[in-house]
Image (cartoon, rainbow, N blue to C red):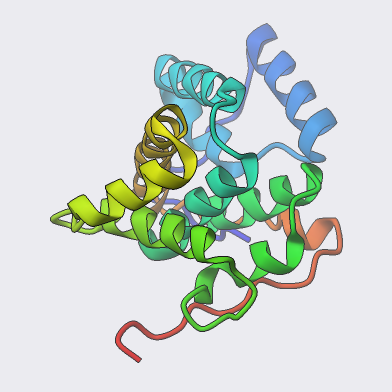
Length: 194
């Protein structure tokens, strides 16, 4: 759970605030800390939420691949909020929870298919500074999932980077969604280079 964010959580007020809090409690069981932080600039909050809602409607790429890619970015960047929330969402979408739980240590886990491993590697390669995506990575994914799905996957990974990095910068940490619904804790991320 978050103890201190770098920008204090604002009181969510007014009619719009009431609607947002009601929706959050109904769908998530609580009001995420991130909403209170982003409440300081409601235009940013609403635009980011709107874009996130549009991303959820994309359907050219397998939902599990997109979810796992987002979680790989969150794990690599260190966004405990996104990792916890996406694990919770994977549960709600009836995705493979054994695999979802292992995302932080996907290189060492033996539960992933070769395609899933390529997607996770691609997500990390896009997240590196400087990105380390290769022609071979793209060609392999194109041959397996097609151009439309690859474009969607790439955009989802870019979206994941645009949400995970601000949360880390602002000190927004896990709100405990997965624990609240009794999910087994996520595996610990393997030490890089081991």
